[in-house]
Image (cartoon, helix red, strand yellow):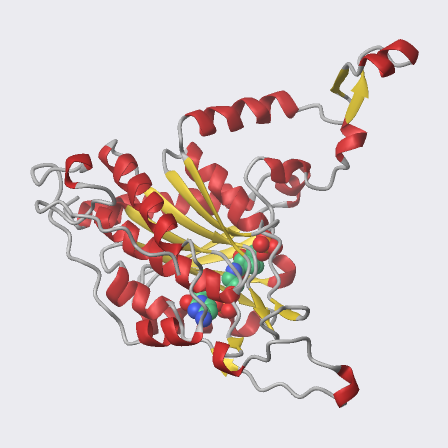
Length: 353
Ligand code: PMT
């Protein structure tokens, strides 16, 4: 593990990722936030899930990002996106994966930014990414051409975008560059379940510094099963030893410490994915009862692009795309984000923020 450099925290608040002199907050602007509490899961996380070497460095980045944007009056949303990978060997050849393309998370990130949020995008390596997701099915070489077609142009290397293949590239590129220049998107990658769990914990502790202005939008598909580091074989499992029987442990439900201990003042949204529509609402309500967070976005695998239900303790909002919407390529994420940003604003006012 990388050694933590010693950082002296500002005494007037607990938000500083850097030295006291760099503190962006003053007590007159913000309420003093409590240090995140330890949870019973912390020990298990440290013992059974390999800690990524860069976690402290990433945590400092996330804290600085959250502090800067909250000071500028923006909400900050942590979006998780893509599926986690559970290795079966420590020098990994084989692994279990959870299904998620990353479309929900990456598309939502764009709408959150359009709604005035800064986004920490905690996503699976190589899953869909905001803005570039629109061109993900494209072969890059098919999108390029030589300026004047034949012969000399090919030799001169004068390459341009083929406007027939990418008609709206300029519009997307313009928005992408604005977001980049504005520093509104902080991408963080994970691949394995261990990386996901440790980075999510670090993100929660970072966002705890901005209280109710923080939102968690947990769209990633997270494994419920894993092999503890201590029980994992080092080398490739040999098929010459016969059929493989796996015994997997249960992954601790990370929502519980997140809501109770790591970021207790934040606005937290979990997702519920089922393949059986008849149990969906019941499972979503049960999650709200168990974890006491603010909302669940419930969806069924086959219809997730056109139908979701946003469930809170007081309400149930069905968001549906019509056939016309589908033809017009409306993103259901636009409606999800609109519903949740309104609820978040209300939440912030109720907390007196
Ligand atoms: O990416 P796409 O292809 O567009 O698909 C989007 C999606 C279908 C993956 C997304 O909309 C979705 O439903 N994501 C959640 C999938 C999931 O993992 O559901 P779950 O029922 O296993 O977990 C429910 C919640 O508990 C999740 O918010 C998860 O963050 C949380 N969880 C899960 C496991 C765990 N150990 N701890 C947790 O806190």
